[in-house]
Amino acid sequence: MLKIEELVHAYIHSHCDFEKEIVLTNYFQADWEADMLFIDAAGFSHEIEIKLSKSDFKNDFKKSYLNKDTGEKFLKHDKISCGDYVCNAFSFLLPMGMIEHTVIPEHCGIIEFYHNEDTWETEFYLIRKPKRVHEDSYWKLNDKDLFIRKMALNLLQRKLEIKGKHEELIFKNPFDIRKIK
Image: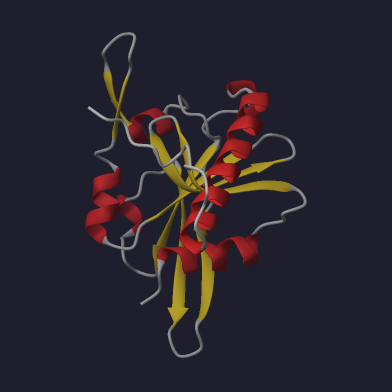
């Protein structure tokens, strides 16, 4: 069975130019985690959400956002489709034939994959390009300096997490400290 991490690895290494794009996986933005987020040199951003089951796909349309100021609740895909979302484009990456294309909203791109378990090769097929939901640069909607600081903090957290799994640390990892109630 293909793991999501293996699928992400196969996709980014066959479709990304690491010298021209920022490529992030499992990145939290807004109130949701992007399985893959790509930001090109011009600031155009594209989120790709991986769905490996029909139920997981259906649940994506139940995700909501609560505006802290007004208390209003918005569904994720309503925000995306009207352009009130940080990314310029949104796509689903799905197993070939899992979902009828007609049930996928028009603003969403569709990428299907076929994984050959005998050769362990994965092929990707662009079925429908995503629509640009707005023209604003990712950097117009997000503070680039804060973004870089968050990436540096994430790297430090991951380094300490990996080191802690492989060797005994002589200091407490500040990211492992749990709040005592």
